Length: 414
Image 1 (tube, rainbow, N blue to C red):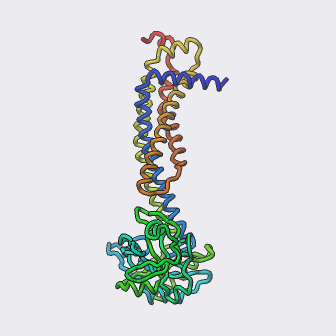
Image 2: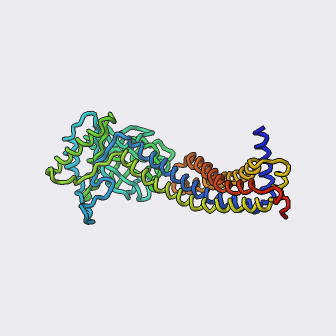
Image 3: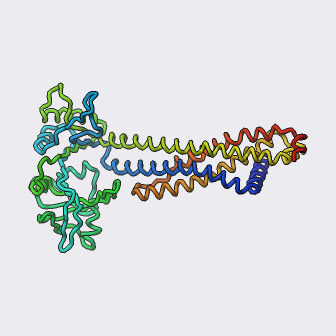
């Protein structure tokens, strides 16, 4: 019986919508615009979070780096003078690796030798946009990188300064296209390097390709690219994640010893954990999500007013119809339910339309920004819940007003 009554109310609601088609379309569009803004921003935020998580999760949650600075800019006391940390020099990086003996850890030293190198193979050459890095045998493991072809550097390669290299995946698509890149010889600044491995594709992050790079042994890189003030990165991976906090504390003490810092002096280097970096960046995306809700709520507030207005007008226009229904025995709850369901139908139509537009717009923006798109289930659920609340708030008063109409007065209404 209840199901039959519900179906009847849906039928009446759709019939009423058809008789006020233009007004209904405009109301649906107003609701849809608010939902589109909400879903679009939440979709882009979800894609951004997915991209960042994918990019940084490869580093592993049991890795930390020692750099010139930590993630945030540090100021001294109340004044605004930024603390200038010295670069991490090669002797310091080597001294740290020698002195740091925490169990179950692997330490890697690396540096960016040049970011605009030209690489040649036979009669072909790349645009001068290749990044060359000097690395050791633990760099790939600590960075979460893999080779799809060939192998990683061995201790022999690093200690004997072999002229070997590992190239990014873009080389296989361009410079070394249609050939097996392994054991081929490429030229960097006149030096010949034998390709021993090809990295797994990483894609682009914020428009910067992660696959246009060449890794060479660190001492070879130091001899070829003898720039002044080269800043080295120390990366440490620990096999057991539960020992990470102790490993970081021990690394801090070791680096302070290397730099001969007295107990009263602050650290003049930064230690950044991979899981901290992910959490810091994802916390920023929360503000974007909050912005989406603010924009959505402002627009949806206007939608609620528009929806309430159309329903109040509908009650006024259908006063005689309500009087006839009441005269035939319709209860107050039946009349209220009828108008309430009509409001819900209009609200959900706007919600569905807004979700489709929002996801489409979000997908387009995510594609332009090269983010990894994911289906924004949270945004979809949020949109449905929001439109349901809008319908309840907007439909309650008109439904109550319709149910309280006096049948005799309503029948006399023209």
